[in-house]
Amino acid sequence: MTTNSISSADSNWTGMVPVDDTALAVTDTGGPGIPLLYLNGQFATQGYWRRVLADLGPEFRHITYDERARGKKSKLSADYSFEACVRDVDAVLAARGVDRALVVGWSYGAFVGAHWASRNPDRAIGAVLVDGAQPYDWLDEAMEQRIRKLFRRLG
Image 1 (cartoon, rainbow, N blue to C red):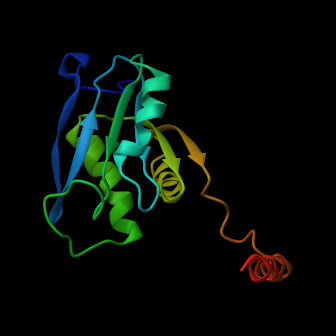
Image 2 (cartoon, rainbow, N blue to C red):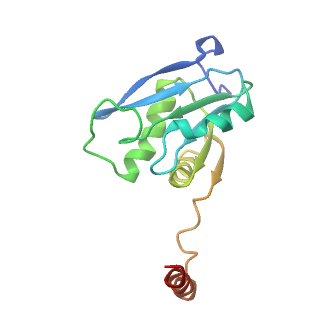
Image 3 (cartoon, one colour):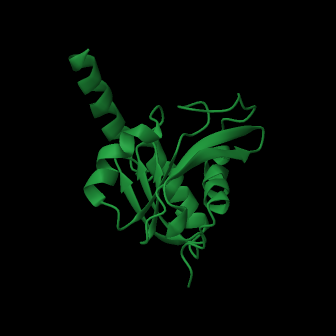
């Protein structure tokens, strides 16, 4: 079972990965370990992961990227849909020669990671989902009213 087919000799690669009608800024540390693909929060960039990467260290292969319309990008895109974001995961992994990865998603990235992992169980080593990816049906009417009341009081 190969998790990364680009060797660690290709470390610290940074570049643009063409996807559909745009390109995504990608950074790949090329470390020798399990490939970890980081998925940003909705308005975040790959720079938000710097401390996490430093804390986890060089024994992992860390891959980060700026989603469409965030951070560095080559040009605008006609498609900023959720489905495009899920497809972008495949494009980044393919461009870096990664067959299987552990996805690490934060906020909006957790939703993207959960959907990608559920659609690709043979390619997902696992998923670490932080501050997002809750079940869509967890919010019942009573809870919604409590949240609205709390927001009115805070406002």
